Image (spheres, one colour):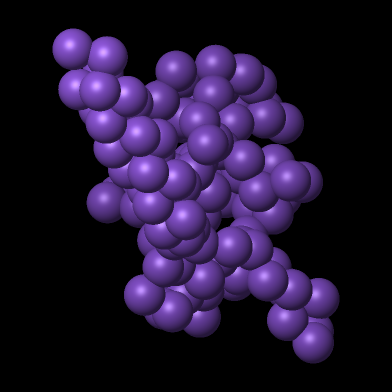
Length: 108
């Protein structure tokens, strides 16, 4: 019984070591030579359109550049991204209110 338990423990330890040695692929932010920020995905392509990352939402233009302090028109609706590029929600932006989804819903 002891020998069986020792073998099982050794097998589990080796399995854990092998699994931890496998690299985790994750995208990354990269700054261009023009000071633009782009998100390079796992497959090497630039993210475009809406990017959901770590609980934040960003708008990436058709060249893959993160937009900041910018009104985005998407599917006929308006959204605003702040100076960090995050989608603004449940707030007034200038004279416009954006709801919990970030969509502009009214004007003051």
